[in-house]
Image (cartoon, rainbow, N blue to C red):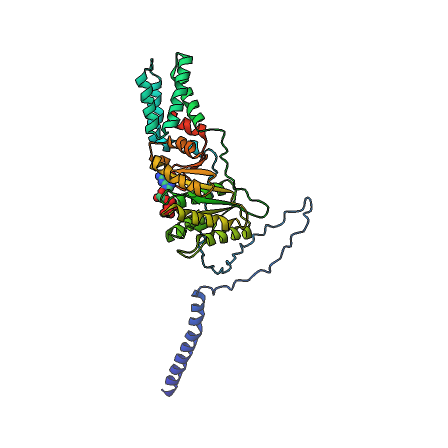
Length: 397
Ligand SMILES: Nc1nc2c(ncn2[C@@H]2O[C@H](COP(=O)(O)OP(=O)(O)OP(=O)(O)O)[C@@H](O)[C@H]2O)c(=O)[nH]1
């Protein structure tokens, strides 16, 4: 019996041992193959030949990776705002461009006169009507009589007239009354090492300071350089005003303390103009003067002091066209005090009395050199008699 038990145990041990050997082998056969480790083929570097051989296989295309450049860090500069300097338009042809501004005078002097003159028969009352039109347009009695007399003579001699002929005759007579031969050029060119000096005078409110600024723009627009002298020290705002005009066109302004000596400002302005080499020094003076003696004292002193640097080249009298014949009386005082070389007639856009140009020249014996036709910075035009009269007679045609 003991032998039987021993034999059974031995048999069991043998069976377990045999099973232990066979099962792992079978399991190994069921498993998926282990992942293969990729093998990197050796890289054969192809170096393209520098010079391609004819018939040789094409060199492999080498695609270059784009080089991404990182932008350099730029440090931002603080933005300093520079004032915008304007370049005014040249003055040539301005009167023609601004002709529509004469609309109020056009209806009286242009359309009014032409309609009477082109009637079939001109009777005495027609001529009276023509006279009235001219006088109400501020041409002045004397000039009106001359113009009417000459027109009557022409009509008498020529007899029949067409509207075109009448228009032509009217234009010729009005131009003649404006003395087209007068020298209207502005003396603003510099001399050897010294700028031209222009004094701007006139009663306050005539548009003196504004005109001074506008003249500066005319000169700069025509290619010159300018310096302003703010010698109207009575009104602080006048100096600010002229300085603003200057800043807009990049021109310097010399100014003094409020209520200071105008002559000293004028002197300093010319000196500064000599030092900086500008072409023209424009001096705005005060008009707020109570009587002729005061005016004479002040303007006389300004002129004397400025002339220590050299003679004044141009003295422009600014007149408000809307003040008509009254303005003319005030203007006369200035002509007695200083040697006025030219008239600037302002605000012609605001009056129906464009004929004042004729009266001013006749009464003062001084040429109108510039006319103001609006409040805009470039609404100042060199005066041309023919273009002016044509604008009046033909309107905005
Ligand atoms: N419509 C019109 N207005 C003008 C013209 N010229 C000047 N003015 C206006 O007239 C006003 C007076 O001008 P200013 O230049 O201040 O006069 P001013 O003579 O210098 O006066 P004071 O400095 O007080 O002596 C302003 O409002 C101008 O804009 C012009 O041709 N036409």
